[in-house]
Length: 356
Image (cartoon, rainbow, N blue to C red; front, side):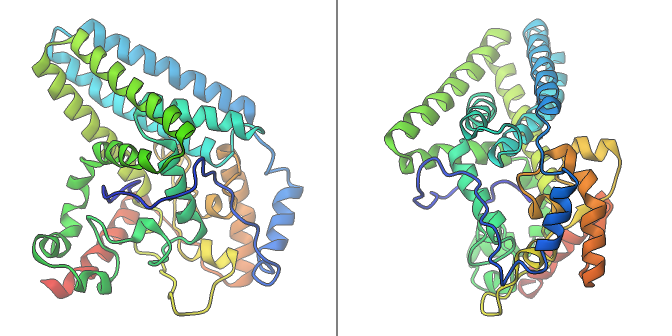
């Protein structure tokens, strides 16, 4: 799913929100508890600090090389070709911030927070406090229309009840949202920055100073680098292309995960942790390229069941989780990447069907 589908002011939250998924209550966790024991016994909840150190170091090296290339080629329009690797590496940076928010990287919450602030606020201009709170609520109740901000009413809507309330231009958007989905993802990079800035007024004084200062440093550094490397017109075109490709890439990484999957009935019985995460999530099949391109989010079911599990452990945990679901008769949904997009777009098209 896209990381942000709304640019309206976010709700007031407590500062320094962190991913702290509550363990399932005993009456809800009876199906999950045996799986947890199996995964823990296999050592799959142990961190992979060395793997992350190598991955982060390589990514930062490639980021530095790309922006050095921007400085070297800035006098030529060929510099626009570097907007693509800059966007792709920006998505890798976002994936590191995502993992840090889930406490996957280091044993210390402080270290994870610093990693998140550097990769989110400083390098991307995306507020880690805003996004952490939003993503935390999504993980707690995925696809729940009353509790998951990712399926709330925004640019897109996700249920026919939401669609029925649309008027005017919003109704036209909903009527055509399936065909507009990928084009509108080109605005996602800017939307993330706008939402991050809007959220600052809801942060505590210290958090507002830290996060706001890093966001300002990102904006100043990004603007200065582009204007030093190229003339204002080139800088404007490069920034537009870079942010559009970055937003599209992130949207393509998040879109396959939940759209078109089960949506819990707000008035129905509450699902336990295992069913709440498995039934609402979709995995994407593929090899090393898929793992790299989607930042490990292709193991969405496994990630939702064990959000603090280190990214390289997810592939190892998958057979255990799949077997456990099969023993319970619980569907474990996996598709190819293109099929995942097709299912999501079909759901969006069906939501807007009554308006056509």
